[in-house]
Image 1 (tube, rainbow, N blue to C red):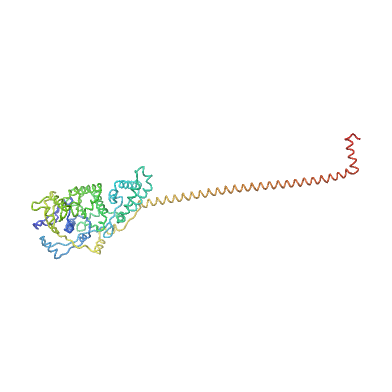
Image 2 (cartoon, rainbow, N blue to C red; image 1 turned 90 degrees about the horizontal axis):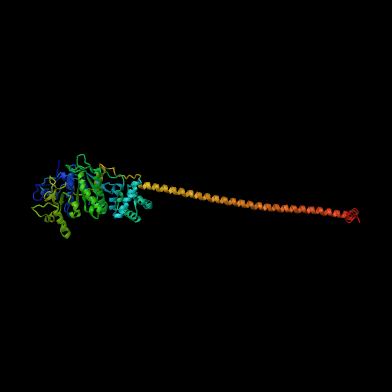
Length: 527
């Protein structure tokens, strides 16, 4: 059964309540108004009211003052005067069950997601890439999927970009031209985003978005409070993070249609950051998520200064509106006042555009959907007081609440499992080892070849030396033989000479003479 949530009392008659029906709280809403007009109090009143009826809430604390929602309020003279003007005797001060979150892990439990889960479209928006660079980034994601490389954290994506850059020529045939200029631009923007602290947003354990949808033992919905004061300095990261959460909820929650109360309500403070400088593709995705997520039982409430901060096709989907005072000092301010007035169903008792500039602090023009889902006539009302404190909680109080949180210890320690960085490092290491082994083998082959050459040279030299030695030996032998022959010849000659002399002497004697004569006589006829 639908529960009426009292937002305010009519200014003209404080006995009449202005209510928001929980059945239509998932039809989204807008809280707008200039700085200091009471938007934060209205935000707290709505968040506390949803929590009390068992609806979990997520809201971003842009200035740090919403943390007071975790602490019970107390009475003071000014507060008592306020509730008296509303015809209220007393307020049951109470703290709301609160879980503190922080993307940077400093003022709350860290929120992380993986590179793969956030995807190339949202990451391209975070990196402020152009269409060509976005296409290259999508190809990098596809290559990682095809090669079984998990993209979890910053170093995984950086390693993947380096890997693709080094192998762009090999990958071109299958994945198209992977321009070095585009890869370089992605790497530079990634480094810049990391310097802003975004590297702590990527990693594990990644957030289970269903942890936002929990109730305490009393049946009150937990208020998930995101510390966003530092996050506001990086609006791209803030906007992308919020859109990622909505996308995760849209994918994980089943279709439920209209319920008695929402499953979860989101409050997006500084909502203009979600739309400023968003690419057409991203704006289309935002509009699609806002339009379709209400069927999952999720209500989205944008908190901003002017309705002009919200695109018209989104503004037209916001059924519940609380408009605080606007100033009309400039033509742009006057246009904002007219836009705000035109979005309300007119009330014949006052002029809406005039009333917007006359509203007091804590007063607002309010129009919610009635029990039939039709926008009500706009009413001028005084916003109800919150049950929580007005002053932010201290750092020690925050730490104490975090220590008692139902998610304490779940996300605090980073888990760095095997992913693209480690896989590519191993591949590089293996390649280096193979290269070293190849170099060693090549060097060994060179050394072996050199040794073989030296051995062959040595062998040739040895053979040459042996040949020379053999030749010298042969020459020596020849000389020796020649000498021996000469010696033998001399000996023979000496023998013959001796013999000849001996013979001559014999011939000189009578016997010799007889022999000669006999010889000569035979020759000359015996004469």
